[in-house]
Length: 214
Ligand SMILES: Nc1ncnc2c1ncn2[C@@H]1O[C@H](COP(=O)(O)OP(=O)(O)OP(=O)(O)O)[C@@H](O)[C@H]1O
Image (cartoon, rainbow, N blue to C red; front, side, top):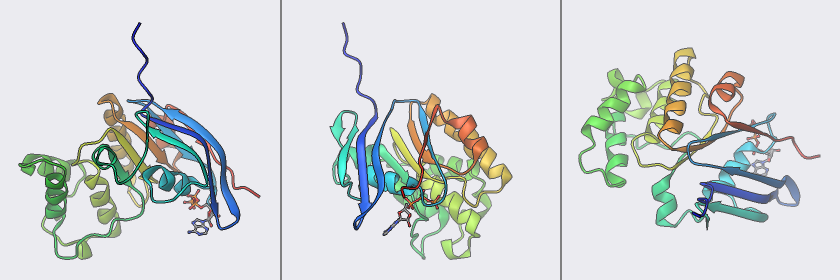
């Protein structure tokens, strides 16, 4: 009998505190390849904090986080290779165009001829007309689209996205929704925080609701 594959992501009894103040207590969930979990809850409930713990940007007070059965370590090559993250707005290089950012990132992840991928991604995300603009000249929504695009020009088994719908227009949110569904079909696991009920309804296989701790 074959052993069942480990979940892509397994979070067990996660706890996090800022100073003495607990913000996450006893959070447990598992996420399998090709599935999506949405983290929902009011402002301040701890969604970003959970995502930061998972990508290694915050240190949990307790608990276990496993990626494909192994403790997650942001310095490990597998994590950097397999996890595409969109947390805050990216800090872009001021003197690289939108297209050059995507090209650089794809090459850094081992794609030696990313031209077609970069073009397709810019087209998909509606940034082709802005391909040669510097980040400082993009609108805030266009910068957000560029940040999303950076997650799409690199290999990924797990996407960790904090409010990916933020600042997108209606067409952008529709595109995002369709794209995340496609990502799941391709086997990517997605953990995302969102305040958009329609996006959650369309994309998430399950929902984890956080409430602010007293
Ligand atoms: N660096 C920090 N230092 C101290 N407290 C923090 C820090 N970051 C977040 N917090 C607090 O932790 C709680 C959870 O914040 P978090 O950003 O995780 O919430 P969230 O659910 O993502 O909220 P939102 O929906 O507004 O994005 C909040 O009360 C917040 O004020």
